[in-house]
Image 1 (tube, helix red, strand yellow):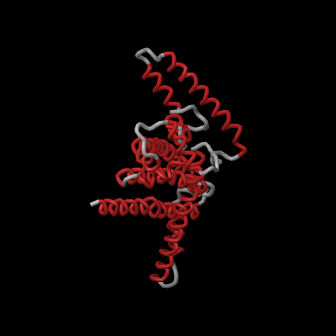
Image 2 (cartoon, helix red, strand yellow):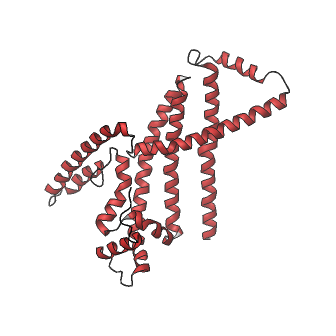
Image 3 (cartoon, one colour):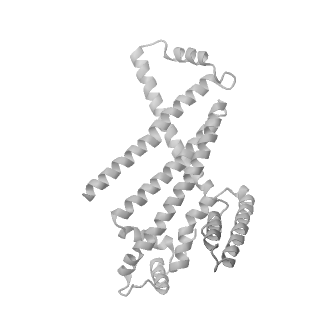
Length: 292
């Protein structure tokens, strides 16, 4: 039964890959061909487009030319999909607040602004500790970030929140514990995590497509509008998927950390902060904290 579940999830992931790469690649290739054929000056000239398409398909053996064009379209679509996938990484890092050096001053100012907003709301939480307004004040603070901001963006702080909260609560480092914990997770936990990460990757890949469309706007301006719209949608989706994935990671640690402790200590209940520190040092094997 479990094997069938894994197979079904694998098939769904393959279908998502085809939908996320192949079909968008075909659409982009068609629009790119349209933009290159029309240019900026004749951006909506359908008659010119039909004329150039007829010129492209005229002459030679009809079946041979069609086959060559089909192969060219498929190759261009696949290349565009790979490029969009490659651009998804920089797009994700940008949303996470990992900006190039020239933008470091701006990132620092935005981070400090978020910190001031969080500090003021945290102070309001402290003042409302024994009142009925505490839940409302906490919601306002958490809307800025779950932990004190260290990134210029909400998404960046949300993705780092699990590691910070786990460190404060259990005194363990998520980066050191996670690879070992992953080996102990049951498939009923791994599969939702893998699917959530897949959805996050799909959202960032949409950002990669947005960049490609924006670049195509240099020769055909309607593509720039499409890129701007795709970028806004991708930004919203990445935020939602990051929230989902970070919550699942933290939940997996909360639920299954005792299983990991059981592997390294006979007396593991209740989970003690001192044990968390001991296990972290054990995993580091005397190498100290990793550089990040």
